[in-house]
Amino acid sequence: MASLRRALISAQRILQSTASPTRIHVSPSPSSQPRILFCPQYGWVSRFSTTTQPMDIDLSSEESKRRLFNRLLYRSKQRGFLELDLVLGKWVEKHIYSMDENGIKALVDVLDLENPDLWKWLTGQEPAPEPVNGNPVFISIHKKVMSNLDSHASPETRAVAGQPWVRGWDDFKKGRDSPITGNQ
Image 1: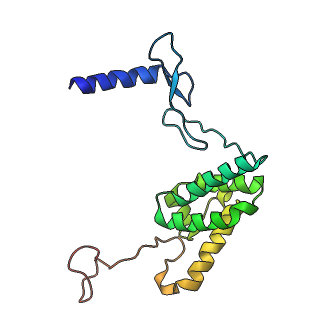
Image 2 (image 1 turned 135 degrees about the vertical axis):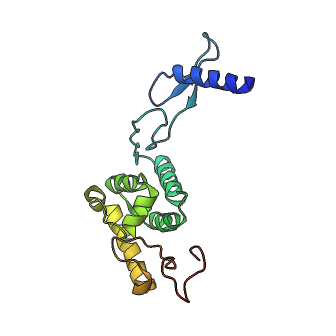
């Protein structure tokens, strides 16, 4: 119980020593320099503020291009949503090296979208909002996904536009083909 109390007191001190909305500084002693404990990455929303930092797009040197491209490739391949990891990762890998600054800004806007919403919009389960629907990167990825669905998925296995894609047994219909329990 004492360790929990110490941890809560330490957390309170950290939160009270916030010098800016996007950084948390900890000063071990009054005479020493503060060290940065938490600093959000570009485009991420800090847990401690409601503002985001704009992503610096610097295409002036080869090293800054390489770092930016690697960061965007990683963000597109490691989203934590397997289907989007595959779709976005392959698309970004193929197109990022031919993009200009406006294309990269549009890509960052797409990468900042939430996974479930983005997946529903890309697969046509729900119509995309107007700002997203006007994004050239989103339009290109959406066309690619829809052409893949049209060529590889039979129409009877796909959801009607505006309906969820996941289909299972009809649990309410009791017949000889229905499951005994659950969504089997």
